[in-house]
Length: 415
Image (cartoon, rainbow, N blue to C red; front, side, top):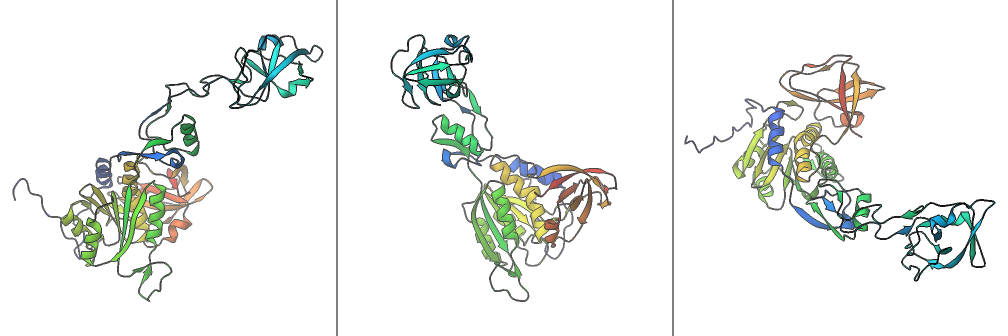
């Protein structure tokens, strides 16, 4: 073999895996391969949930003018010194200021202007006395408590100073972030493009939920799970196809352009109809196939051109596990989201032993009872109900034989 040649991947169909890659090696490949996608402009009204591509600087100050923070009367704070219940100070009312309709003209010392919240403060005035502390009669008000200069006034730049960094790059925008962006006058905002994910479901025995089912067929549960996970991780579903087990159909669906990530559910193991690994090797690169973990050991990954391809086992729990460990991580990284588990962590004490084996990673579904936990299922990769009965899962690392009762561990909660 020449130095510039690489060996063809082993065909594991009906042979099994001679060896499996470590989870750490698979994660390293994901992190090297999944780089944030380029930015795009979106309407600010549609920005919630998107990831900001670059830091956002304020082109204007907010507020851009001195404005009333209360309904009441604008005046000079110093003129109210000494006002009290037994020493009311009177002011002539010169007119009024409304939001978007300022009071025009000079305001003599010792006079006031009726003002509504958000209205511009007239020139020369520096405070607002709330309406409940001033009684108005025949064009005059009587003030019974003092206000300090700039009290009940929104100062220029009090909320946001012109030129300030408002939001940092990489932030996943919340609805209030969009409102803040809009308050600065932006109609659009630069965000990272969402990954486009193609979902391919293999298996001649798989039928759509609600469709007629033969005695040896099964309903497609993985598609529903994966579509929810794809949405959770901020991606767009490019297409969803059920394509059976025919190699030519699988190859055509894998090689079609238009996706950033392709998820293939089923067909990744060592059965005679498990074509996806060999097809990926022929069409692009099969980087890893077979991983030292339980469940999901038949998982694999690679690429076709710039498109990342993940081979997810057909058993539902294995599919969920492989997605969360590898495909979901890649999708989150492509979209600029944190790569780590999108599950809330909690510390808990092991009540019943969790058994594992050195040399593999275990994904153990657990049930919480107060501050204690018990393993719900250590095997049964096809038992999807174990994930609905479980409160979360514990990851046992490759160097561990498990956790004894009394051990404190991190639980990743499914909520």
